[in-house]
Amino acid sequence: MEKYVLEIEHLHLYAGAKHILKDISLKIPEHQIIALIGPSGCGKTMLLRSINRMHDLNPDFRLKGRILFEGKDILDKRVDPVWVRRQIGMVFQKPNPFPKSIFKNIAYGLRINGLVDNMRLRAIVEDSLRKSHLWEEVKDELDKSALELSGGQQQRLCLARAIAVAPEIILLDEPCSALDPISTAKVEETLVELKQLFTIIIVTHNLQQARRIADYTAFMYLGELIEYGPTSQVFEQPKQEMTLNYVKGYFG
Image (cartoon, rainbow, N blue to C red; front, side, top):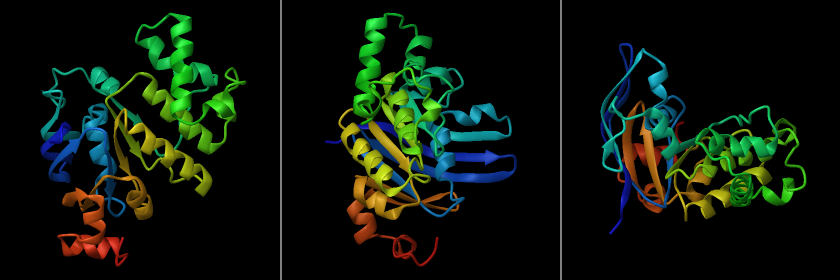
Protein backbone atom coordinates (compact mmCIF):
# COMPACT_ATOMS: atom_id res chain seq x y z
CA MET A 1 0.00 0.00 0.00
CA GLU A 2 1.37 3.37 -1.04
CA LYS A 3 2.09 5.95 1.61
CA TYR A 4 1.25 9.54 0.70
CA VAL A 5 3.70 12.17 1.88
CA LEU A 6 1.55 15.09 0.68
CA GLU A 7 -2.19 15.40 0.10
CA ILE A 8 -3.64 18.40 -1.69
CA GLU A 9 -7.38 18.79 -1.16
CA HIS A 10 -9.63 21.11 -3.17
CA LEU A 11 -6.96 23.78 -3.56
CA HIS A 12 -7.95 27.14 -5.05
CA LEU A 13 -5.59 30.06 -5.63
CA TYR A 14 -6.76 33.60 -6.31
CA ALA A 15 -4.69 36.62 -7.31
CA GLY A 16 -7.04 39.49 -6.61
CA ALA A 17 -10.17 38.60 -8.58
CA LYS A 18 -8.33 36.17 -10.88
CA HIS A 19 -8.95 32.47 -10.21
CA ILE A 20 -5.59 30.77 -10.93
CA LEU A 21 -5.84 27.27 -9.45
CA LYS A 22 -9.27 25.64 -9.54
CA ASP A 23 -10.12 22.82 -7.16
CA ILE A 24 -6.83 20.90 -7.35
CA SER A 25 -6.75 17.58 -5.48
CA LEU A 26 -3.62 15.39 -5.61
CA LYS A 27 -2.11 12.65 -3.49
CA ILE A 28 1.69 12.49 -3.70
CA PRO A 29 3.21 9.06 -2.91
CA GLU A 30 6.54 9.08 -1.08
CA HIS A 31 9.84 8.28 -2.81
CA GLN A 32 8.41 8.86 -6.28
CA ILE A 33 8.99 11.48 -8.98
CA ILE A 34 5.84 13.38 -9.93
CA ALA A 35 5.92 15.50 -13.09
CA LEU A 36 3.58 18.46 -13.58
CA ILE A 37 3.02 19.06 -17.29
CA GLY A 38 0.84 21.42 -19.31
CA PRO A 39 1.07 24.54 -21.49
CA SER A 40 2.63 27.76 -20.21
CA GLY A 41 0.34 29.61 -17.84
CA CYS A 42 -1.67 26.54 -16.82
CA GLY A 43 -0.78 26.86 -13.13
CA LYS A 44 2.06 24.36 -12.69
CA THR A 45 4.51 26.78 -11.08
CA MET A 46 1.73 28.39 -9.05
CA LEU A 47 0.91 24.97 -7.61
CA LEU A 48 4.56 24.37 -6.75
CA ARG A 49 4.84 27.76 -5.04
CA SER A 50 1.65 27.06 -3.10
CA ILE A 51 3.18 23.89 -1.67
CA ASN A 52 6.23 25.89 -0.56
CA ARG A 53 4.10 28.71 0.99
CA MET A 54 5.76 31.25 -1.31
CA HIS A 55 2.47 33.04 -1.94
CA ASP A 56 2.62 34.26 1.67
CA LEU A 57 4.97 36.94 0.39
CA ASN A 58 2.29 38.53 -1.82
CA PRO A 59 -0.79 39.98 -0.07
CA ASP A 60 -2.78 39.82 -3.33
CA PHE A 61 -2.72 36.01 -3.30
CA ARG A 62 -5.34 34.01 -1.45
CA LEU A 63 -5.49 30.22 -1.01
CA LYS A 64 -8.45 28.01 -0.15
CA GLY A 65 -8.34 24.29 0.50
CA ARG A 66 -5.81 22.18 2.35
CA ILE A 67 -2.30 20.83 1.80
CA LEU A 68 -1.62 18.08 4.32
CA PHE A 69 1.95 17.20 5.27
CA GLU A 70 2.72 15.06 8.32
CA GLY A 71 -0.89 15.43 9.37
CA LYS A 72 -0.71 19.23 9.35
CA ASP A 73 -2.44 21.62 7.00
CA ILE A 74 0.61 23.63 5.96
CA LEU A 75 -1.61 26.47 4.68
CA ASP A 76 -2.77 27.08 8.25
CA LYS A 77 -1.31 30.43 9.35
CA ARG A 78 -0.34 28.84 12.67
CA VAL A 79 2.12 26.59 10.83
CA ASP A 80 5.52 28.27 10.54
CA PRO A 81 6.40 28.79 6.84
CA VAL A 82 10.09 28.50 7.71
CA TRP A 83 9.42 24.99 9.03
CA VAL A 84 7.47 24.21 5.85
CA ARG A 85 10.35 25.32 3.62
CA ARG A 86 12.81 23.29 5.69
CA GLN A 87 10.73 20.16 5.08
CA ILE A 88 9.87 21.02 1.48
CA GLY A 89 12.88 22.37 -0.42
CA MET A 90 12.70 24.16 -3.74
CA VAL A 91 15.02 24.49 -6.74
CA PHE A 92 14.13 27.20 -9.22
CA GLN A 93 14.17 27.39 -13.01
CA LYS A 94 17.23 29.64 -13.10
CA PRO A 95 20.14 28.54 -10.91
CA ASN A 96 20.47 30.95 -7.99
CA PRO A 97 23.73 30.21 -6.16
CA PHE A 98 24.66 32.69 -3.46
CA PRO A 99 27.69 34.94 -4.17
CA LYS A 100 29.75 32.79 -1.83
CA SER A 101 32.08 29.82 -2.11
CA ILE A 102 30.80 26.39 -3.12
CA PHE A 103 31.28 25.19 0.44
CA LYS A 104 29.45 28.16 2.00
CA ASN A 105 26.54 27.71 -0.42
CA ILE A 106 25.91 24.16 0.77
CA ALA A 107 26.63 24.94 4.44
CA TYR A 108 24.39 28.04 4.51
CA GLY A 109 21.13 26.32 5.44
CA LEU A 110 22.86 24.09 7.96
CA ARG A 111 24.45 27.04 9.71
CA ILE A 112 21.24 29.08 9.97
CA ASN A 113 19.64 25.97 11.46
CA GLY A 114 22.27 26.00 14.18
CA LEU A 115 24.90 23.48 13.05
CA VAL A 116 28.34 24.80 14.04
CA ASP A 117 30.44 21.60 14.22
CA ASN A 118 32.93 22.03 11.35
CA MET A 119 33.58 18.30 10.93
CA ARG A 120 29.86 17.60 10.70
CA LEU A 121 29.40 20.50 8.29
CA ARG A 122 32.15 19.21 6.01
CA ALA A 123 30.71 15.70 6.08
CA ILE A 124 27.24 16.90 5.09
CA VAL A 125 28.60 19.23 2.40
CA GLU A 126 30.56 16.36 0.85
CA ASP A 127 27.60 13.97 1.09
CA SER A 128 25.25 16.51 -0.52
CA LEU A 129 27.67 17.20 -3.35
CA ARG A 130 28.11 13.47 -3.92
CA LYS A 131 24.36 12.92 -4.04
CA SER A 132 24.03 15.72 -6.59
CA HIS A 133 26.84 14.24 -8.74
CA LEU A 134 29.01 17.32 -8.30
CA TRP A 135 31.66 16.23 -5.79
CA GLU A 136 34.20 14.86 -8.26
CA GLU A 137 34.03 18.07 -10.28
CA VAL A 138 34.52 20.51 -7.39
CA LYS A 139 36.16 18.62 -4.50
CA ASP A 140 39.50 20.40 -4.98
CA GLU A 141 38.01 23.90 -5.23
CA LEU A 142 35.36 24.20 -2.54
CA ASP A 143 36.58 27.73 -1.78
CA LYS A 144 35.91 28.81 -5.38
CA SER A 145 32.98 31.14 -5.98
CA ALA A 146 29.85 29.23 -6.93
CA LEU A 147 29.21 31.92 -9.55
CA GLU A 148 32.18 30.59 -11.54
CA LEU A 149 30.53 27.23 -12.11
CA SER A 150 28.80 26.37 -15.39
CA GLY A 151 25.02 26.57 -15.60
CA GLY A 152 24.61 22.82 -15.21
CA GLN A 153 26.98 22.74 -12.26
CA GLN A 154 25.18 25.68 -10.63
CA GLN A 155 21.86 23.85 -10.91
CA ARG A 156 23.32 20.73 -9.29
CA LEU A 157 24.84 22.97 -6.61
CA CYS A 158 21.39 24.41 -5.88
CA LEU A 159 20.07 20.86 -5.67
CA ALA A 160 22.88 19.94 -3.24
CA ARG A 161 22.06 23.03 -1.17
CA ALA A 162 18.41 21.98 -1.01
CA ILE A 163 19.10 18.40 0.08
CA ALA A 164 21.77 19.36 2.65
CA VAL A 165 19.08 20.27 5.20
CA ALA A 166 17.40 16.86 4.66
CA PRO A 167 13.90 17.85 3.49
CA GLU A 168 11.17 15.28 2.91
CA ILE A 169 10.17 16.73 -0.45
CA ILE A 170 12.07 18.54 -3.20
CA LEU A 171 10.20 20.84 -5.60
CA LEU A 172 11.85 21.69 -8.93
CA ASP A 173 10.54 24.33 -11.32
CA GLU A 174 11.82 23.48 -14.81
CA PRO A 175 15.37 22.87 -13.52
CA CYS A 176 16.71 21.86 -16.94
CA SER A 177 15.07 24.50 -19.16
CA ALA A 178 18.31 26.47 -19.62
CA LEU A 179 20.68 23.49 -19.70
CA ASP A 180 22.34 21.67 -22.57
CA PRO A 181 21.49 17.96 -23.19
CA ILE A 182 24.57 16.66 -21.32
CA SER A 183 23.84 18.76 -18.23
CA THR A 184 20.15 17.81 -18.45
CA ALA A 185 21.06 14.12 -18.49
CA LYS A 186 23.20 14.57 -15.36
CA VAL A 187 20.40 16.33 -13.51
CA GLU A 188 17.90 13.64 -14.55
CA GLU A 189 20.24 10.85 -13.46
CA THR A 190 20.68 12.60 -10.12
CA LEU A 191 16.92 12.96 -9.58
CA VAL A 192 16.24 9.29 -10.32
CA GLU A 193 18.81 8.32 -7.69
CA LEU A 194 17.56 10.88 -5.16
CA LYS A 195 14.01 9.52 -5.13
CA GLN A 196 15.33 6.71 -2.93
CA LEU A 197 15.73 9.39 -0.23
CA PHE A 198 13.25 12.13 -1.15
CA THR A 199 9.92 12.67 -2.83
CA ILE A 200 10.37 14.84 -5.93
CA ILE A 201 7.83 17.05 -7.70
CA ILE A 202 9.09 18.57 -10.94
CA VAL A 203 7.50 21.08 -13.31
CA THR A 204 8.62 20.41 -16.87
CA HIS A 205 7.68 21.49 -20.39
CA ASN A 206 9.79 18.64 -21.74
CA LEU A 207 7.36 15.76 -22.26
CA GLN A 208 10.23 13.38 -23.03
CA GLN A 209 11.78 14.27 -19.69
CA ALA A 210 8.52 13.46 -17.89
CA ARG A 211 8.37 10.11 -19.66
CA ARG A 212 12.00 9.34 -18.82
CA ILE A 213 12.05 10.08 -15.11
CA ALA A 214 8.54 10.50 -13.65
CA ASP A 215 6.64 7.72 -11.89
CA TYR A 216 3.45 9.79 -11.94
CA THR A 217 2.37 12.64 -14.18
CA ALA A 218 -0.23 15.35 -13.63
CA PHE A 219 -1.54 17.23 -16.67
CA MET A 220 -2.86 20.73 -15.97
CA TYR A 221 -4.72 23.14 -18.23
CA LEU A 222 -6.03 26.64 -17.43
CA GLY A 223 -5.65 26.14 -13.70
CA GLU A 224 -7.41 22.78 -13.60
CA LEU A 225 -6.05 19.29 -13.05
CA ILE A 226 -7.17 17.37 -16.13
CA GLU A 227 -5.56 14.01 -15.44
CA TYR A 228 -3.24 12.39 -12.92
CA GLY A 229 -1.87 8.88 -12.84
CA PRO A 230 1.09 6.62 -13.56
CA THR A 231 3.23 8.20 -16.28
CA SER A 232 2.86 5.22 -18.64
CA GLN A 233 -0.92 5.49 -18.44
CA VAL A 234 -1.04 9.27 -18.90
CA PHE A 235 1.12 9.10 -22.02
CA GLU A 236 -0.02 5.83 -23.56
CA GLN A 237 -3.62 5.37 -22.43
CA PRO A 238 -4.90 8.72 -21.17
CA LYS A 239 -8.47 8.81 -19.93
CA GLN A 240 -9.15 12.36 -21.15
CA GLU A 241 -9.16 13.42 -24.79
CA MET A 242 -7.49 16.72 -23.88
CA THR A 243 -4.59 14.81 -22.32
CA LEU A 244 -4.23 12.71 -25.46
CA ASN A 245 -4.18 15.81 -27.66
CA TYR A 246 -1.53 17.44 -25.45
CA VAL A 247 0.85 14.50 -25.23
CA LYS A 248 0.46 13.95 -28.99
CA GLY A 249 1.57 17.55 -29.54
CA TYR A 250 -1.66 18.86 -31.04
CA PHE A 251 -1.49 21.96 -28.82
CA GLY A 252 0.70 23.51 -26.13
